Length: 361
Picture 1 (cartoon, rainbow, N blue to C red):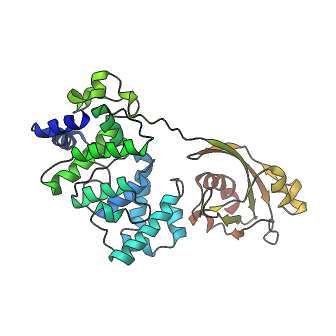
Picture 2: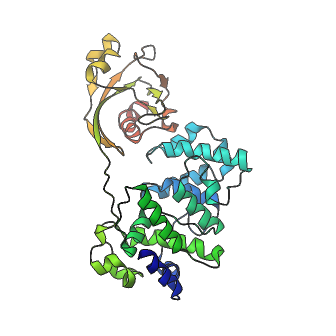
Picture 3: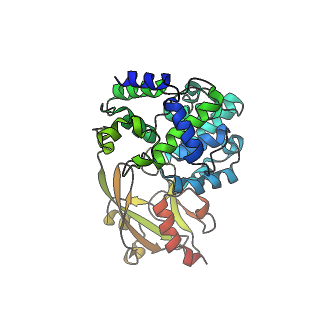
């Protein structure tokens, strides 16, 4: 029934795709720095950054990345630490590592030119089906469907698609429906505009909470609107299981502002980033200190840091050591002028900025 509805619309003249394209030209987003271009490097960079991250957060990171790495060659040639440093605070750091590896493969395997098809793009690190479709459709006009979170919401509501997307077979069915609704002609012009349109609609009108159905160009044919229950869609029963962990952070520093840091192992929390030493409890932290310093620690206020699947309850402890004194844990003294340039987890950067900066001046 859903497939028949899609076919009827496309056969009817304006059609689903044309309605969205016309809406995007008048009401879509046009002021984002990665829009209005068919440069695969910029589109790819924005798509990776926007995964599970808000536009307002991504925008300054995107602009800083372009200033430092204006093309895929400069990104590929950069040390990974430089990439992680610019990514610091954006979260989901595996994206940054994959970003760097992907740039290197584009340079070594494709001569610095991104592949033109979604199928080829998906062979590169960190590029899934939806990101590949975005790059291929926007940059190269390929007739291929994006199916990110915003698009799933638009399509399931419009089609009244209530199958559980926790099951891979149902997501494949939705992808087929999405493909049936794509533009049929003038793909070099219609596909970039359509792909942007369906993402814009999900981000600005067909939102997860309080959708603006009265402003939606699809409202007259939208089954969720007719049922007056847009929040019912999409259906996905499997929920992420969250856990919690207590972590003690050792903020050891010298009077000159050097900080004891080590690079986190891969995989794991904050993999590949430079970090303060982590301990399971206060006693383990104290044991790592020279005996003289154990009575001199300053326990700072604890705070909560939220990861994708886990809540970290962080207990920082600050202590002053001489450069000849070293904690009994992996790491090195990193000078006050250098540690701000490293890739640091956001809470560690904030903590060091508040605690170490006054000493380093």
